[in-house]
Image (cartoon, rainbow, N blue to C red):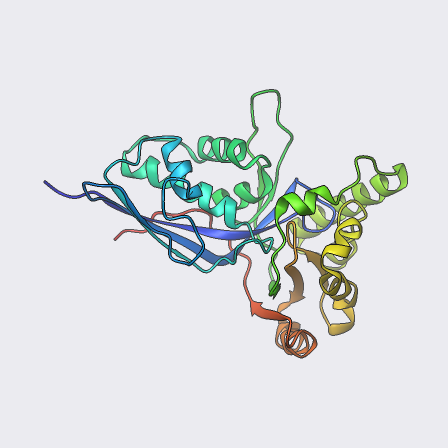
Length: 294
């Protein structure tokens, strides 16, 4: 009997993108890979110390939302740092769902995978980018229905650099820092920024993108959790970048750069962040979750 085996590859993601709290996100070319094999007994190699090596692992939990993992071996390899605001949990959830869907030929559409992943994650932005790739805009749920996101291609000539601090910040802690109410002025400013950002991404307009990276809803309130990251967001243009945003819950900073400037921006960031963060040139990814042939 032929042993069934599948390899799933899921990109990291950066959510919020400044003003688009819980609505906007982008896929990044940093990946989680999960290989699942019908091995006769359950086992998991989580690929890193400190990650659960039993059924409590998020990949396995997502897998078992579709099919029992009895008899399945999981082998995990990940480039995505944990608790840094790069969508590690979203990638794990999507990987588990896609693995079960393909291993057992359940025939779920990407839209169905996305809706299930969003329910497990609790918010849609990271999982949308992980499933569909590119840039995504996530409409609000309509009762029990979770509408598919609007997808945009990465704008030509715009590149990403991530600055990944050594410290971790949990999503729960970052959300706890947010106020329950915001001023009308701040809400209006964020709407104005978000509309310019989406239009700038669609048109590839660097001026609109730069104007659209401003935020008043979450980044200022989370600043005390990672002051060096917030400082860097404010200094990004002085270093030659289009701008910068806190990636998801942080503390990673997503630096937006025009391709001709990326080399010098990267060098300036490495000098600026020496000793407290890792700097990586990471393209925006047009591709979402994939199942390459083995």
